[in-house]
Image 1 (cartoon, rainbow, N blue to C red):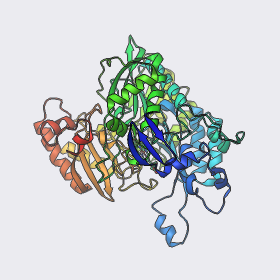
Image 2: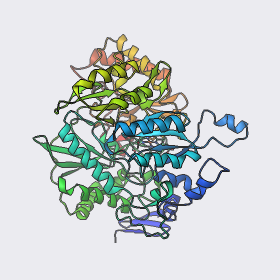
Image 3: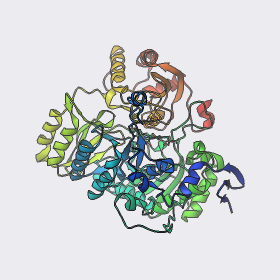
Image 4: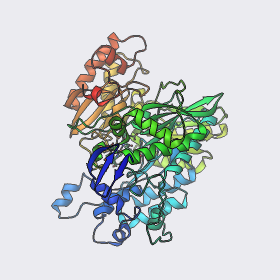
Length: 578
Ligand code: SRM
Ligand code: SF4
C-alpha cells in the first residue's frame, strides 16, 4: 500500500512525512464537519466561535473576523473584538439571477456591518461583517433563493471557476455546465450544512459517506477551473486542477488537463513558492468527472498532512514527481492522457462595456474597482446594480477579475440599462485601461492575515502609475497588468502580474516583475521590502526604459525579461529563488 495515515503519522510511497498537523485531528473528530457549532451559535456570551469550531465554520463557507481598524480601541475599552463572520457563496462560473441579486443586496444592506457586496477573484461574492444572531438568517435567506456556501473555504474543492465569455455563448454554456457538474461532483456529501443552518433533520451517527473527499477531507484547500482559450481570465496557474476547453466547430469535445498550480508563499520560507500547473494531456468529455475525482483523491491520499505549508497539490507533484502523480491519476480514472491539443492564452482582462453575443443578445461588463459594491457618496454603485436587477431579464456574471457582467440584454433594453449604469457611476468613460487592468485583494480592515494595505491602497496608487505612463508618452492601450496583494498568500494573484506588489509590512511591499499578458509566467522579486514611494520611483525608471527600448508591441513584462532586468522564472522552486 502506497499510503498510510494513522491517527498520528502519515507515510506516502514509503516516505515518512511525520506527525499529523492538528487540523487533521480537528477534521477527524468533527463528526463530518458538525463539531459543536450549534452549541456555539446558542452561546450569547461571545460573538465568536470557540476552539475547533473557529476552523470548522470555514467548511461551511465562513471565516470569523473582526475589524482591525477598531481592534486596539476595543482592547482599550476592555471589550472582546467585534467578532463577526465573512461569508463566501458557492457560485460555479459566477452566474447569478436578478432575483438572487436583489435578495443578496437586501441582506447586505439590512444585516451586515459594512453593507457591501464584495466580488472576489474567484467569481463569487462575499458578505463582510455578519454578526452571530444573523448567521442562520443569512444561510436561510441564501437557501430560499437557491444559493449555498458549502465548501467555499476549508480543505475541500472550492468554488469552480469558468471563463466568463458571453460572446461565444454556446461554448460558454457547455463549459459552464461542466463547471457546475464538477463542483457538484466534488462537493462534501455530509448533511452538516443543512442540519446546522437550515434546521435539516439530525443524523445521529457518523454515517455520512464521503467517497471522494474521505472522512479527513483534503490535506489543504483545492481549486478548480474550466477555461476557454484564448481567455485565461481564471488564471489557471493559480489553480490545482484546470480543464482547458477544446472545441471543434464551436462545440466542446474535450479538455486538456493542467494540474498543480498555486501562488501562495511565506516570506522567508523557501520551502514555499508559487508554481505553474503541469500539462497532463487531453481527455475526451466523458472522462471529465473521473479525472476530476482521480486528481482529488490522489492529492487526498498523497498530499502532506503533516505540514500545512507544503500540503497543496503543487508541493505533492514536486515531492512525488509529476509523472508519478499523473500515472496514478490515469490508473484511478481508467484513462490514458493523450497529447494535449494546441491552444494559446493571450489575454486575461474583461472587455469592459458592451459586446454583442453570437445569439444577438448584448452583454455589458461593468468595471467594479476591486470588486467592492457599496454606495459611495458620488457613486451609488450598489443601488445602481440593484436598479438594473429590477428590470433585467437575463442574468449577471461575476468575473474572476472582480467585475460584473449584465448578460443577455435584448436590444430594446440596452438604452435603459446603460442610462442607469451611467447615472450610478457603473459606466465611466474616464476610467483608464491601466485601472481596468489593476486588481487588489481585500486586506485591511477585515483580513486577519493582511500585512499591508491592498484594496484601500490601489486606487490612488493606480492614479500615480497613470501619471507615469502619460509622462513617458505611452498610449492608452499600453498598460501594465498590476496587482497588489496584502500578504504573500497571493489572493490578488500578484504572482501572475507584470508588476506584482506583495505586502510585507504597513506601507511596504516586495516588488515582483516579469509576468505576461496571458498569465503563463510567474514574476520574480526585483526589490524587497520597499515603500510605495520607492516603488513609484522604480516604476518611473522602468517605464521610461520600456517606452524607449521596447520592440514593436512588446508588453512590459516581456520587456523586463528580454532586457535582462530580471531572469525568467520557469516553473519550480529552484527557478523562483535562483
Ligand atoms: Fe485568499 C486566505 C480573501 C482568492 C490564497 N483569502 C484568505 C482569507 C480568507 C484570510 C484568512 O484565511 O483568514 C482572506 C479573506 C479576506 C477578507 O476579509 O475577505 C482571503 N482570497 C480572498 C479573496 C476574497 C481576495 C479578493 O480580493 O477577491 C479571494 C476569494 C476567492 C473565492 O471567492 O474563493 C481569494 N486566495 C485567493 C487566491 C486567488 C485565486 O484563487 O485565484 C489565492 C492564491 C491562489 C492559491 O491558492 O495559491 C488565495 N487565501 C490564499 C491563501 C494561501 C493558500 C496557500 O496555498 O497557502 C490563504 C491563507 C490560507 O489558506 O492559509 C488565503
Ligand atoms: Fe488577506 Fe493576504 Fe489574502 Fe490579501 S493576500 S486577502 S492580505 S490573506
